[in-house]
Image 1 (cartoon, rainbow, N blue to C red):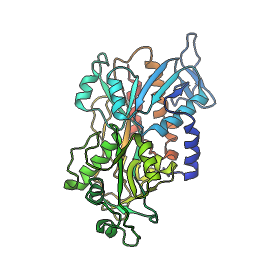
Image 2: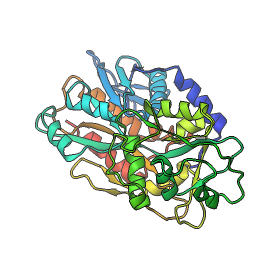
Image 3: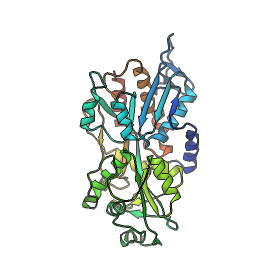
Image 4: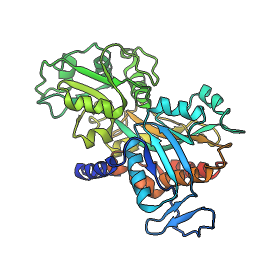
Length: 378
């Protein structure tokens, strides 16, 4: 799974940008290439040219993760070209807000960069009649460390240094700790300006899990979707943090690789203890995800990642976006369309669109389990 050239990524990102905020999709589908006749009343049909099987007409509402926004944009674009009949509106409100919407019963599914917590699973039973919310991995991707330091085109950091930067303990770019990791770089005395998410974010959750797992006492916080360290500046969504880093000299922030690549933001390498510093990419994220363990039970496929990995070429700050849906008790009016949509994005076509966007397609073993879980939704 090689990361495509930036030019290709920009082309996809530009095309996807035409589909804004509340994403309207006039279709949903699976990876099935067979043709199914559509009985009267509106049920499954296949857009033969694309091989996408479209579900019956329905108005699906979904919200959540901005980490998967670029992927959703492309999925939506492809659906709109292939099918007509159903509307799927996905709002990138952040993982926390998406989970809240789902638990309030206002959406068919949620996008989240973190699996449901035990208390949230318990709460989900109120909206999933006879069932509960489950986590379906869908769009793995690396969290990049984007920086804007004029004159510095290659930057190596490690967990301890990152923790001290974002905790306000390292305040200038020529700090000895950064200089030690970059002996040949001409580091300026520019003050460091850190940017973090202002909204409840699975990206924050995963980034801080890395700091907790790899930096130890240098990151003295419990983690979670809300940013806990003092100082720094905040912005809404991954797009907001990336925009601030792009325009602010001396800045550093964290966001999905797709945002860094589409905006030509420099990204740091990580000294993880491997033989060589690791470069952020789809390939390096895939090596991390492939070693993940399924820790959910039943149809829940929540994954446990190794944030402190020292494996050669494995990028340790990797998140997995989940689609959260009821295993049982889904609303009858929207269940067929929900299953069709999820089948498409979990299929080879939907997953195949991810690499060029800076995401890492699901490993085959995990993708097979996801498709089986989707088929059993009721």
